[in-house]
Length: 92
Image 1: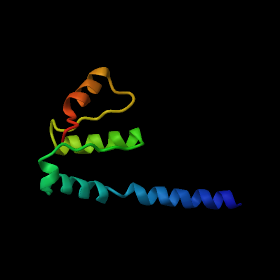
Image 2 (image 1 turned 90 degrees about the vertical axis):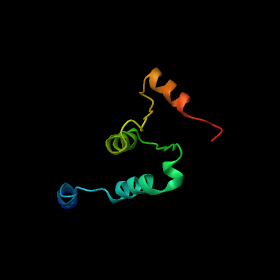
Image 3 (image 1 turned 180 degrees about the vertical axis):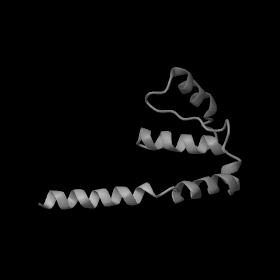
């Protein structure tokens, strides 16, 4: 049956992904944030449509850039929203 074949392919893909421990895009992004002068000397806003992506980036960037990452999503508290407003300088 074709569905069984598709299921087997999906299981193979899942098994292949289970062995992946690194994220080259994230590593490149961290490298850019660390070494590009224009990024190290200024505030940076990162927008994403996905809360999961925001949480993923927040987790990994917060571990690298202690006390420098602020994440705001629809579920964020009013306090976090205020922090975003205070930290965003529209004149920059």
